[in-house]
Image (cartoon, rainbow, N blue to C red; front, side, top):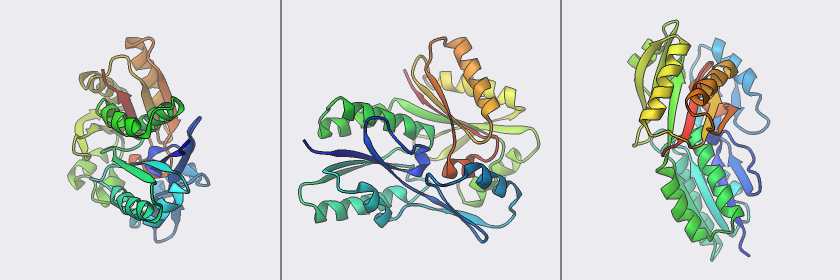
Length: 278
């Protein structure tokens, strides 16, 4: 039987998948003083607190082709899942690694999926892939079905600061300035093109979470799975879970902490929500 391996970059916030062979290719967050590698050894809380005080320049670095090849290992077939190509070079590097891997290993295959997203939406995709692999689905069917599944998922967010996103050219500095006012939260979503689309500016977290719930329902949330990632804001994540379960009693909702890359961009207090649409 051919061995199928699932691989993603660390924007997925996932380090292990139950019942499937998995590897994560870490992104890096780089400053003049520190370099943070987004792998299992990273102390995320320490990193977040560092950036809470740091005033210098910072940038992120995606896995290169060599990093991806290391993650592929010696699998017969690889399914590689990346952060949106609209915000990172991770997808392009994975495509280069695919060409090298397939040319050096005759008969082996690599499928690279650009999620046009990040964080908990990628987590949902990875969990679905693991489910397909456990179910002995063929490699060809897995690649086809996961593309269809991705069309039925989405990502929304609530951010209290967008400084790092603006400094790295991911959002408009004007939008980031609005989010910088005390008590203002920005609610938005990942667009169909894989960019971050800011929406409502809300006064206070409770109002922002109420807006987030309405946005989720407008985007097609009914009874599907929801994955909530937070950056040092467990209380806000739990409040969101309560709001959702008050309207959808039997909804499956998982809460997790953002890891390095997502914490860097979500910043302290930020919440990301991956969800399945109807």
